[in-house]
Image 1 (cartoon, helix red, strand yellow):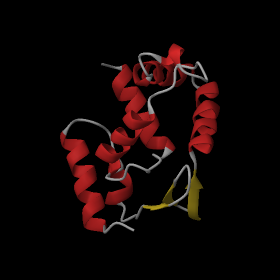
Image 2: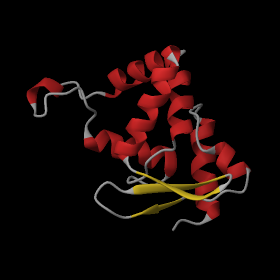
Image 3: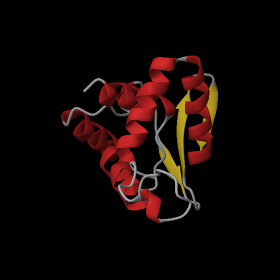
Image 4: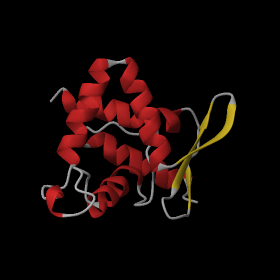
Length: 134
């Protein structure tokens, strides 16, 4: 588990660059930690809930549910997904416009200080709205 100081520094660095981060969680005294595993998990305390464990599939399903209720959010998420895609996605199976694994690991490392981190839903939504507005 990373120290609170390391988490604050990672978030502060991301915020200085203009990207939304986990600032609300850190300011409220929350803690974040990652557990190992093939897909990795990112745990964040929520009010009224002891711990919420999230995987990439769970994150995708929660984002899809929120996007179904808000068309503007759906557009923002699609814009970000298209920007993140591997530029040669049609050359490799599963022939879907998915981002390269190395790129996602680098993005998670620069945003959260851990290449195996899985971002909270609210962080992805804030980033999508910020990126789509540019």
